Structures are given as C-alpha cells and as structure tokens.
Image (tube, rainbow, N blue to C red; front, side, top):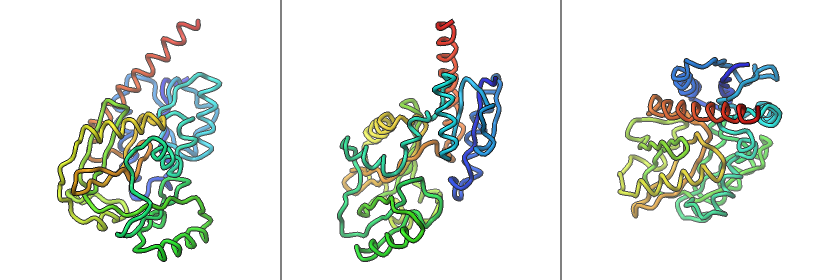
Length: 274
C-alpha cells in the first residue's frame, strides 16, 4: 500500500488550465518525496489503489464514489474529503452562503446579470454567461436547457475590482488582481475592466473565505470576489483545489505540510487501534 495516492483532475474540468492544475499537484508531490507516492489520472483510479492519504483534484462521480469507499472501508484520509466533494456544486455553495450570511451578489440589479452552470464547475466558456438584462437571461436559460443543463444560478452583476483568492485551511491565504497580470480563463474579466484597487479589509475577506471553506468541508480552495468602491466584497465563485498559479510554490509548501499532518494523524490512529 502506498503512503500517498495523488489524483490529477480530468482535463474537462480544467478549461484553459490543464498545465497549471497539474503543476500545483506536482509541486506538492516534490515536497512529499520521502513518502511512497503514486500519481495517477482520475480514469486510472481503481479499488487496487490503496493508500493512507489521497490527494485528489478529481471531480468525476466515479472518482468521488471510490474515495468515499476508501474513507469508509479503509479509514483513509482524502484531501479534499470525498463527502464534501460529493455535495460540492455551485448551487450547494450558493445555498450555504445564503444560509450563513456570507457576502454574495444580490439577485436583482441594474448592471446586468450572470447565469452560471450550477451542477458542476465551469467546463467551457458557455457555462458562465453575462446577460445585459432579464430578457437575455431568459434566452440564456433556454440555451442551457438545450444543452441539458437545468441547474443554474443567476445573480446580478456587481461593479468593482475583480480579486482572485487562494487558501489552504486557515493557514494560507493569497489574493491578487488578475487584470494587473493578464491572468484570464475565459476573458470575463473585461466586464469589470482594469482594477481601481479600492481599499478593503483583507483580513475580513480571509476570515470569510476560511469560514466558507469550513462550512463546505473544503480545505484546499480558491475563488473570486468583487470589491466595490465602498470596500465591500462579494464572493462570486468558490472552487475546490484550484491551480494556485501565481503562488504555486508557497501554496504547495502549505498543502504538503497539511498532508504530513494528516499522515501523522493516520499513523497515530492506527497505533491506537492496534
């Protein structure tokens, strides 16, 4: 049995980010070189891949079901844990944020709307669509339905600075302005234009994001928010295990540290049971 099995994300869930998504997992594995590590794709994962710890970027239902099985039958530890991933969708996150008073865009506005696929993370540019008014929202919903996608989230567009953030539990936090660096996945940043760098409370954002991570059970995470001219922030996206591309080595160090802590906990638990 391996100490660690690392699972790369299926490429359909890494639109325009395949290389970056692999890079963060590779960086973590370099820091875990003293352990017996096996790195595989989601498609390769099967019941024979036994380990004390699974580092999983996987999102396929089959992957999550296998990881749940490992957690339950073998008392393995999964990062991010399979139970959390099973319910981790945009619609679920939307509900969690509403129920817990976490700052998010309003449902109504005068600057347009966003219609987003809510059953999975975005796989193509067509999964996140800006609409100038309600009539365009209705048309976009019909287009989603024609693709067989009915689980959607609609929110008003908020004007302000787009800020991306990354985190590992409550031990690591990084944020930056993608328009400052040209960082883009689908080009949607153009709707907010260049950053004005409105002042805001970074520690409050960090605390709020860590709280959302705790509520969803996700320990390696990232997302996007809008900072308006008053310094208020609105979280518009939250994802499991992002690429950490602007802070790959720093994040990898924290993820590896967390992995070592989990492996130590696993070892202690086995000794206690024996």
